[in-house]
Length: 167
Image (cartoon, rainbow, N blue to C red; front, side, top):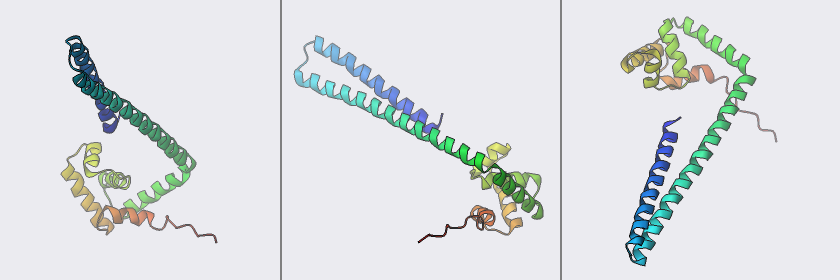
């Protein structure tokens, strides 16, 4: 479960907890003869808490549904283009060898091209973020590029051809 989803679930629990406490207080206040204005304000707060819980649940369901659809689309795309992706990966590997990247640098190169942050690269590799940054700088130097964007562009620039507009 993503951080956003966990936060949404926590928010729903908080809203429901608040609604429960307000309902208890409302019942107690009514039994003690509280004024109508006081009861109306607490009733409005109860409704607001319940509406907050419902809206958060709806957003969570919609987000989860969209994420499921996006994952299915990505799986479909990868399945349809498996051979192309394999060929691209092999071509990138040949270029890494030509640049004389070490095996560790090659792994980091792939992780950078996949879009992982330096922190994520370090965690995947079981190293410090500083080590990952140093190795990334070595990759950029050996490749003759200034950074991650140029590294990605080296491999993707000529692959991504704009479609011709049909008039």
